[in-house]
View (spheres, rainbow, N blue to C red):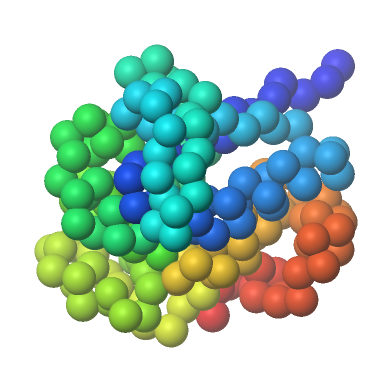
Length: 198
């Protein structure tokens, strides 16, 4: 009997950093071709096109209102994460739904912190924004970490670190062999994903 597909949602908002979500999307998409049973969907406040940091426009698959708890939700960063998304009540409510896993890339961690999900957790973010994360009480901030994986919550450093975190989660969810094949097909040279994120 085939394993049930796990649904991965990628949150979008205005001024999101492109590679923060396209990197994980590429990893999980490639992993599905390597045998991981997963399906991707892009989620935003509405299905209107979202303008990303460098001008890319992306059409979401569905609205936050129509997306319930998922197996994994990717929360990217970028200017939009640290200027408006972390104050958006609809986004904060969505992040706090009982998803199986929530991962952030770069300053997506600020959204997690603002939602309260990082209280009593260890987390990381882009090296230039560690001080912002430290503004939230109860968050233990790890410097110089490529990523941090906790119980149901994972955070990564900036931009390309999200690819390592995504590969690390592929390894945990579908096994090392699928993760290795995924890294190989992507020609990803970093081996950080095979360790503990340092």
